[in-house]
Every structure is written in C-alpha cells, then in structure tokens.
Length: 128
Image (cartoon, rainbow, N blue to C red; front, side, top):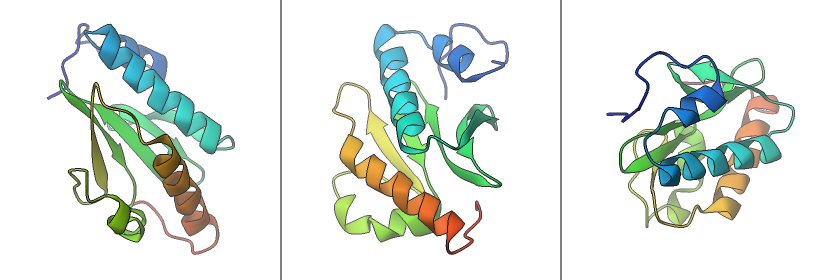
C-alpha cells in the first residue's frame, strides 16, 4: 500500500513524489525519476494508474512507491531478458522490487530502459 501524506490524487509526477512521508522515500523516487528521464529523454512522462510512467506511443516502463520499497516495472519480456542479472532482487511479472536504503542499480536499470525502448521501436512490443 502506498503511504502518502496527502491522500488527494496527484496531478503530476512531482506531486506524486511530494506526497510520500519521508525525505528518504522522496529522494529515492526522485532519483528513479532522474534516471528515467536521462535514459529515455524523448519519452513522455505522466501518471498511469496513479504512478509515474514513461511512454512513446505506448507505455515503456513505470515505477511506483510503497511504504518500504519502490517497484520499477517493465514488460515481462524485458524483465526476462535480464533474468540472470535480477537474481538478487524480488521480482514480479515485470517488476523489480527496490528497497529504500539500498543502492539503486542505475547501470542495470539504464540497460533495461535501453532494451525496452529498442524492444518497442524495433520489435513493436507494446505494454502488457
């Protein structure tokens, strides 16, 4: 469950991040946002299902904050392409659990973002 200070619906990604309780959560989510924007500079940014998402004609990837961790979410095919490098993470269908207080695997996520963009642009793989 997302632990938010302000329970009103955020209008943009900055409001989404500002709605979290702790500076640690906010900093972590801002770093995920910065990483997303740096590695997908032509992608649009918005809220999908109430969470930050990055898209071209289709959603590329998204992230979500929770009380003790954030999830970074790709297509299952992108996650599967990196499965051998995700063994130290709890994962879901397309998600990677990133506990607050641990280092963000920036290089890995950057590679996954590049893979996802190529997967969309070259292979035509749409969101789930």
